[in-house]
Length: 279
Image 1 (tube, one colour):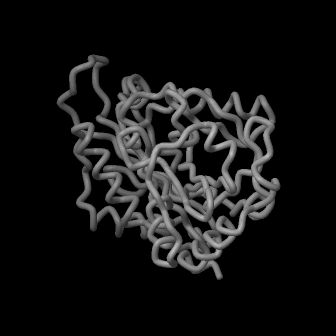
Image 2 (tube, rainbow, N blue to C red):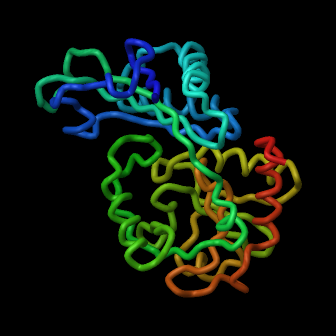
């Protein structure tokens, strides 16, 4: 029996029903977060909740919980679902259920959160993955973790149809991020990633890894780089709560460097695991 947290408290998943005129369904009018769990313990929860509230403010949406209260209820949600394995917490809030009009309705927002299991991608963390490049056709406010993910879905499907793990997006030849992760390159022992502008999601794992790298005297530059820079990098890796620090060994059928996980990528993986209490 899965327990879900809603505006009204905890209930069985089967009891959670929303009207068909729900703004998440009709407009994508809402935001979400995914929090990584390792053996029942949340990783970077505060960073995720801070981003949730920033996203809500950006779209003028009121969250029906104080931040501390939401934190405590999410911990209780994990306990109620007896999640002791590696997994995640998914939480979503929309502007609510009301007659379909573009103007903001006068109604309460709809909120729900649930837990699920999610194993670590151990083999891919070691061997790396292949990706393709794809035009970034998303809207301009990618820093908002909104429900408007159709361009991401289409690009991810294109990658899948080409036998690749993901698509790395570029806008006017400038690499932004992938469909669901931030992208880094390494050149001459310097880590480079797109600046934290409105064009990318300010990833919680991204930000933490930048801090970890700098704390260990590895140079990190937030700067624009091109698809050519990506293809000619010494190392490429992607980061997110689900994939951790994932090496990219091939882009558009072109092998990156020697086609193996790079030295800096491997070191970052170790620091990530130490930070998340995995080793």
